[in-house]
Image (cartoon, rainbow, N blue to C red; front, side, top):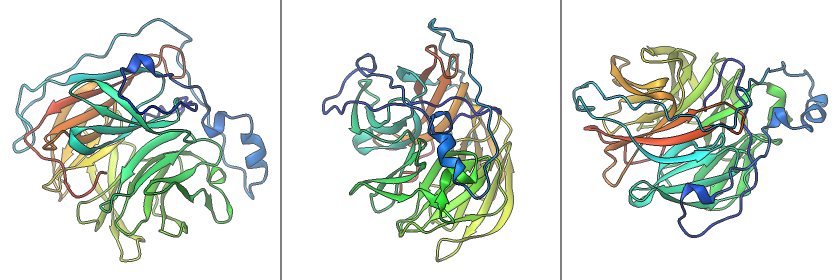
Length: 356
């Protein structure tokens, strides 16, 4: 999720489900509100034991012109990761504050959440056509699929929480310590799902949380700038971005987190966001200008330069040797808001056992 210091406007709406693939121009961008922008938010926090701190939402100028797509830089060589000279390609563009939290789908497709439009889409990068696979979502912020195939979405509207979409739709959690999640402050951001049916999620401005398979929700560590969050391939380590740094936790048998430690410092951009894991256990972190790559021991391996505004990455393609990036550009929260999905070929192969 792309967040300015003032936490950009994220709005979304209910879209009409579609069964056939369509070009981006045929989809409604949507217009629903994230929780803190909803007029009902004041009533929700009035019932909190302690009112959460206020957040100033920043908007760009009200400009309805068509902003230019950011430039697509070439990669420098990172041994075992990417060949030098490879260049990002645009595979999808759409209006609004949409396209967030991407994961791989079946047969080389990509799946992603749409904030404004309130849905989850599946994109065929080869044709540039997409279809809605889940709609009427309460501000869809990011998606993650477990090793067992269960699909979850982080929701950002009133009633902020984690919803399971597959194999059946149900709310996993929308509360903490007996109060709505809105009471903890911050903004619901990213998630990653374990094989036990539990979900780790980040609330930017607050920290890292875990909801077990029964929805019991706990918070761990000290990560006020929590944003991108992902499990290692063996699910023994949890990584979370914290501003310009990445922290790591040990994952215990019951899903609890221990031994918070510094893992690495980001080098290529503005701060950590959506992340990915490859088959060798390397960590890739979107920074707003790059995908920074770390070895499993935290050694910084290099940056893959990306377009300005690249705030999420995921491996995909039929062999999972394509790195996809989610890009926001234009004026945040206005008619000039735009998003794109870009792709670059890699030597590295994404982890095959779990989608995020």
